[in-house]
Length: 196
Image (cartoon, rainbow, N blue to C red):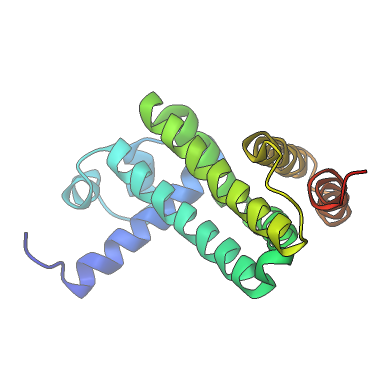
């Protein structure tokens, strides 16, 4: 496979950005290659030159927004250290998704309409597993035993994050900062405080 030219790389990046905008605004079903082409100011044939299908383009856009999310959350977690990593995870996840509602909608639309069911199982595990490991490391940093169901803890925390983000999508005036802090307080009491 030949290396893409700078122009081809730039066009692909533009098409991914346009796709994120179109899917976020109109949803996956209403976003056609023709709509993406019109928004990009090119022909549908030019879109197909870069991406063989609508699904291929949406998958590329989905991968880009997930990569941005992982980079943001990863940097916050790394900076916090083991004891503070779960709180940093919650704050950065909610903060990033709140600051990037187009990305949030892209993730939802792709997971609902494009990602095959077998990959959804993998993606769910990829979501809770790192958080469970962060909780395990935080518990160790706090001198707590490894005797709780961290998978369930991660699923509960992830569900809280999803609910907060969904509420902010439904009601842009909803303040996610105190909601994130309340979720952090709950996780610290339930999983990072010594139990008597």
